[in-house]
Length: 114
Image 1 (cartoon, rainbow, N blue to C red):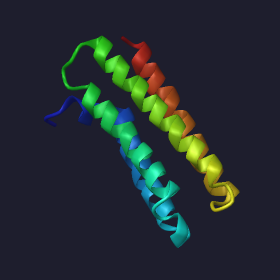
Image 2 (spheres, rainbow, N blue to C red):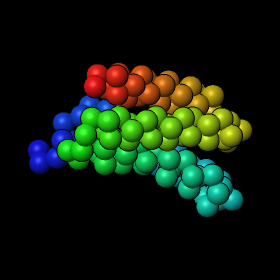
Image 3 (cartoon, one colour):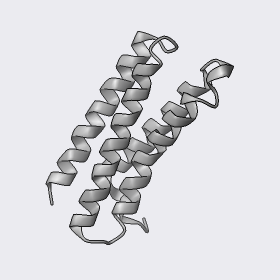
Image 4 (cartoon, rainbow, N blue to C red):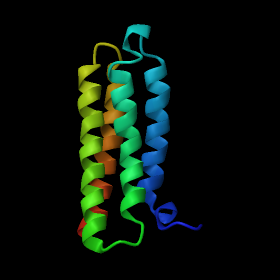
C-alpha cells in the first residue's frame, strides 16, 4: 500500500459506510434525489476523504484537525438520517446510527492517540 490512509481501519470503515449510504439514497423517492440525498452522500464521502487528506505526512496536529473534520461529517450524516426518518425504516436508521456512532468512537480514539 502506497498511502498511509490505506492502512487505517477507520478509513476502511468510512469507505464501506459511504458505499452503504450510496445504496440507501438510491432508494429515496425521486423528489429527494437532488435535495438531502446529495447532502448525505457528500457528508458520508467527506468522512473518508478527510481521514485520507489528514494522513498525508503532515504534523500530528494537522492530522488531528482533519480527524475532527471527519467526526463533524459523521455527525452531519447522522443528522441527515434524522431528517429522513419518514423515508427510511427504523431498522435502517438504527443500523446506520449505530455504525456511525461506532465510527466516531474509533476516529476519536485515533485522534486521542497523538
